[in-house]
Image 1 (cartoon, helix red, strand yellow):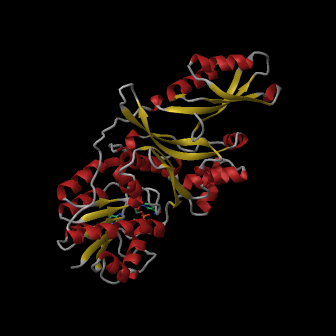
Image 2 (cartoon, helix red, strand yellow):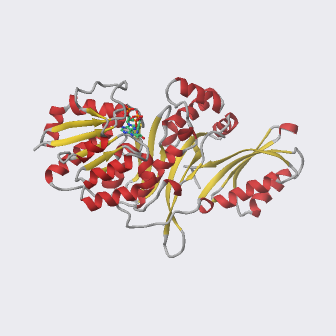
Image 3 (cartoon, rainbow, N blue to C red):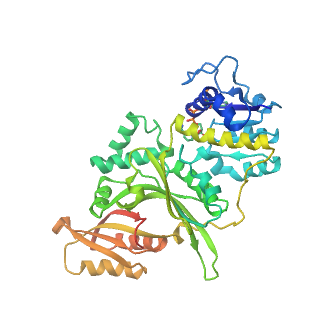
Length: 433
Ligand code: NAP
């Protein structure tokens, strides 16, 4: 028996999957227990330049026909985007093939349709490569931690934004300058919107939250803020309090009433985290996911979050698992959404704020600012005064409160006579509450 594989897409990731399938055919056969044969590679243009030369006769632009082939047991989808990827995956499952994909955008937008199709077909749908590239994180959540209770997942899941923020931190550069350098070095696309505005991280947050909390979470459920508004002053202010600024994907389980009912909070935004937090040491374009669970405690998964070969490594891991299932006539666990938890609105999310306020330098200012926080039920953890006269600034770090309370406090501050300007507002994560 041979496991027949079709690969859809032969770009950065697909070309590396094809390379590994061909170069490691003997090892794959030994590991899977049967030959793994690449029967076709679907692309848009036959003559596009490729990082790996695909052997004669394998490339085809008739992707629909490749997926419909009766002899294909396993389809790897690495085209990306919503269509035609979704139709091709559904068609593959319908034809009895299992699917491995790296398509975070599609999974976060319409995962349930795909999971239901896999369930109906009795086939596997694996997608380790969709979150944090080479880093094994979905399998640990789905399998290793299946007997534990995950309460929180904090991730740096976008290498481009981590590179930019790290650059701002180490060189004092502003956002635009750091973005330009990222583009020159190939860490950011010419159109960096998906990364910089947090869309990519939000898709990954939806996937992580769904798995961690056994509930359906889509990209539309994720509160999203990007890093374009982060200033050099914010980064310096973070440094002054022994913190760094990171774009975090945050997935948390929150108790919402005294009956023990729980909901999911899922969001992507820049946040200050203490330099002592394990995620603070994630530099450059690297990714990491920090997981807290009841029995295991704190776990950290770290590594390259993108790139053709690292992502192909995760695809190949899934491919071997799915091929083994195929040979054994079985399948892995499907979607687990039994807990069916609701997603909390951002306003009800519990967080802390760091607020820098330019104030009039006169007696009583501190008391008035403190009163504004108190009026909205927000208690202050620390307050620091910097500068004098026209440069007088207060830097306040709050205790935890709802995001709505904190946002109302900032609005209130902005309307006060003694406040010249609220110069920086950023959430604080990963420290004492
Ligand atoms: P890519 O370099 O843009 O490659 C896309 C491939 O799909 C190309 O080979 C292209 O064909 C083919 N394609 C596009 N539209 C098609 C269509 N309508 N019909 C048939 N083939 C079509 O993309 P990538 O970076 O490899 O990403 C692939 C997937 O992996 C995406 O879902 C992405 O989110 C995910 N991913 C990527 C990375 C990474 O670091 N790149 C990391 C994690 C996950 P031509 O070559 O003929 O144009």
